[in-house]
Length: 327
Image (tube, rainbow, N blue to C red; front, side, top):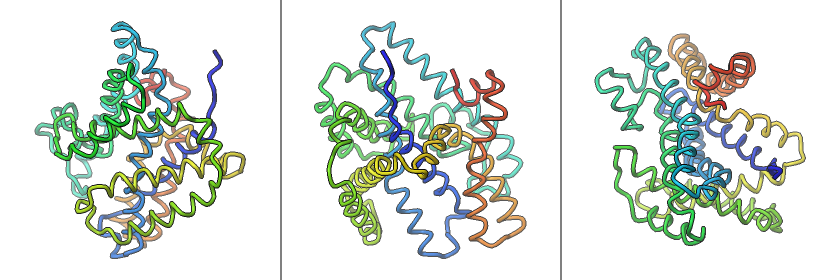
């Protein structure tokens, strides 16, 4: 069987990783007292991680091919190599770097309990945003449990869990697994109904209306925890905007640029921390360059892993397997 290629989803992946890099390009949490920068950060974080879980779910069709325990073991083995090996390798490589730069770190690393945290508490690890990789692995592990149910029924179950389970459990980041399972199955549902929503009419109008809604709700909702459906609404609306935008630009030069970036989205996610953190320490904390200039530098340098992959990891297969989960 010829594997179908979804160019628009590669573009969506590129847009998603661009938003991640942009979100990590602010040198501090005060945003230089800029309300505009604080708002951009809030806007990005209102949907960009659910967006990635939706994309991951879209490509998770193989969970429906698991028919036996043997199939499941092989499936988990592949996910361990793809996700957990890079998670462990890159996290451990980051430890001596963080120790050396502890005086500059927003979250200084502590050796006490470090390995336990990496294995069991993914919100308290050297590269904090690696919780996504950890959580995605466990969602992949759990998802096949539902593969005999109609996907609409699974979506309903996952939605109820998303809305009802609000207790933050740090161990294995159970909250994240339950919370993001819904978005993962939204992606699977989109894959199943791809032809239907790809041909939806009035995409420009939908993008415009959804964009206005997303901008406005992020202006007026200051404390998101007060509004129980805020996270769900912004996640679905923001993800819908960029899924549709990906289709609208699929044949444009902009779309081609994001497609190329999307090809290296995982590499960028795994390695951009080293470049962006180095840039923050050198240009912002040591040389104290202009805040706006540092944002631009951190944004551009965040895509250096593309060249690192091309020049190093793609030419040395063993390194590619250990650091990037290459086959």
